[in-house]
Image (cartoon, rainbow, N blue to C red):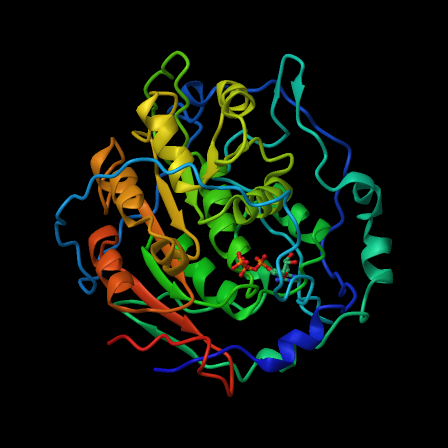
Length: 397
Ligand SMILES: Nc1ncnc2c1ncn2[C@@H]1O[C@H](COP(=O)(O)OP(=O)(O)OP(=O)(O)O)[C@@H](O)[C@H]1O
C-alpha cells in the first residue's frame, strides 16, 4: 500500500504555536531527591501493568543470530535541526488538557536530583510562559490540523486500540501533560493519534511513518508514561558502574540521537524520568559519567551502544521498552549486525516481555524480517503522504 504524508505539512514548518485549552498548573519546580532505579517501583507504589498483548497476529519467530563489531563511524557534526516538518504541528483548537495525576501514578513526579546533579530546565525561558493566559494568547496562531485529516492511515492486527483525537483523551499523567503543553502540542499528529493508544495498550508496534511526522513523541509518551506509572514491579539492585535503563531508543546517527534526546528531555521534565544519550564520534568518558549518574531512558546509536555493552557499562536486562527509530536507515547504513547483537545477543528481555516499537519510513523485506524477529503480536500502522509514492513506500510485500 503506497501511503504518504500530506504535502501540505511542509507548508506548516513556520507555523506559529497553537492554542491551549486545559488545566492550569503550578509550574514551580518541584525537585525531589533522585531515586535510583532499583529503589523505584517498590510494591505498593506501582499500578498493575496492562496485560500483555493477546492478539495472535504478527510473529515471534526465532532468529539466526548475527554477531558484529562496533563501528565508530559517527562523525556527524553538532546536532542541528533536521530537514523535516519540525514545528509544523501547531494547530488551532483541540484539547491539551491533562487529566492524569490520579490514582495509579506513583510518586515519581518532580525532577530528578542527585547531589549536585540537578535537572536542567530544557525549556529554558519558556518555563515562565506556560500560564494558562499565555497558552490562550497563543490560540489560533498555528496551522490548521484539518490539513491532515485526509492522510491515509492503515492499521492491521488483532484488537487494534482506537485512535484518539486529543491528548486529553489519553491518561498520560499530569507531569507529562504539562510538558506537552509546554511544547505547545495542541493536538496529536496522525502517527501520534494511532501509535500512542496502541503502545499504551501494551502492544508491539510496527509503524511506517515519515521523518517529521511526530514519531518522537509517539514513542516517547508511552515510554515516559509507563515508567512514571512504575508498572514493572520490583527491580534488581543496580550493578556498580553498570547502567540499567528501562527503555532503549536506537537511532541511526548522532544527530538524530541528540535530537531525540533533546525532545525526550522536554517530555520527561519534572517527571522523575531521566534520559541520557550515547553516540559515537565523541569521547566516551563524558557519556560514561552521565550513565553512572543514572538513566531510565537511553537514547543511543548502535555502534556506541555495542561498545558500552562490551565494556559492561550498560546492561539491557531491565529493558521494558525498545524503540527503533528510522530502522530502514539503520539497515541501509549497515548496522543490522549491531542491532541484532544488541537486541538478540545481549541480556535484553525477549519479545513479549519487553514492549517494542519499530519505526521505519519504508517496509522492505529486511524490515519485515526485523519486525517478525523483534516484535510479538504486533500491530502494523502506516501513515502516509497524499500524492507521493516516491519517497515513502509501505507496501508490505
Ligand atoms: N502534536 C504535535 N503538535 C505540535 N508540534 C508537534 C507535535 N508532534 C511533533 N511536533 C513537532 O513537529 C516536529 C517534528 O516532530 P518529530 O521530531 O517528532 O518528528 P519525527 O517523525 O520524530 O522525525 P524524525 O523521523 O526525524 O525523528 C518537531 O518540531 C516536534 O516538536
